[in-house]
Length: 174
Image (cartoon, rainbow, N blue to C red; front, side, top):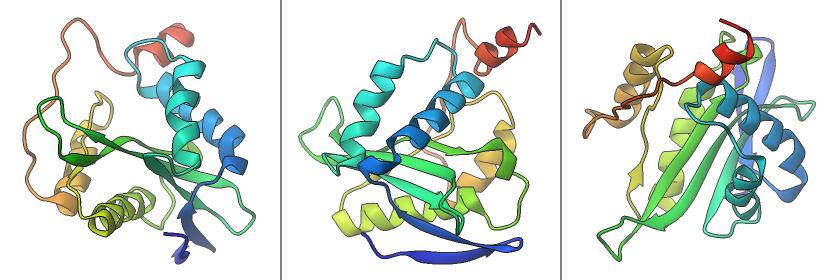
């Protein structure tokens, strides 16, 4: 999994690699930002770190890191190996794909690259990948991207008594 891939995005080459413990601070900043932007409950840095740290150490998961030539992380995907509540079979569960807002409009297909990375990990492990969109912001575009990458959806998420993104709205007084 440590093999690097390069893609051109705008004026810069992007690299995709497996994250390491050295990435923890930058990844935690992105995770908190993503949780505040799209969350529907308050994020817990302790719980985020409890998911991220093992993945950075390749313990029952891994973190795909998309970065520019200077090493600045532009996007991540957190993948964990686990079991469905009704089975002993392992699955690869995507916990989050997040692109830093500064790079969302840039050329280079960052989210697509992280989806492709997720499929490659699942193929390499020979286990199914479960991945989805839980968002009330730009939902249709995200679903179209996932349909292009993964095919027809196998269900849908619903929230009752909550809306994603309200933490950021409340923070800015909207």
